[in-house]
Image (tube, rainbow, N blue to C red; front, top):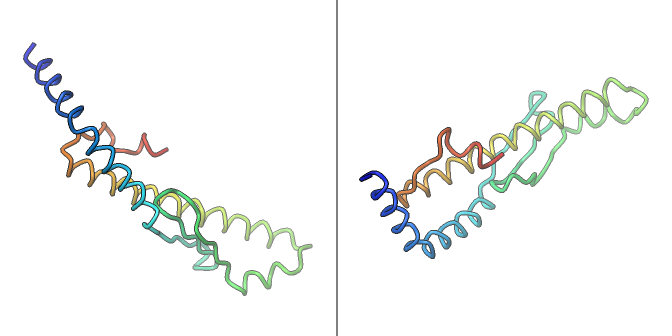
Length: 125
């Protein structure tokens, strides 16, 4: 019974702080757009940069790799390049997701909010 009352008091406190919480969450969303991470595949042949909002900002492909793709008839080279781009993009998005989760956990901790089991992974995917 006391646990329920304690939970209700915590909820009442959270509701009282709702405007502050909403403002902090908006600030956090804006800051996530400024967080950038980079990942590469193929020893740096393909690099992808993503932001904390899980958006790809830039993809760079090594000119040597591009030169090998000039002959589009070479299906193996094209398939390899496609795999490298896919891998770099997925790696960059994973890093961006991790950076965003870390930032959100920091904000939640500052505000005294409980973290869901397993962190924020379920909320970000």
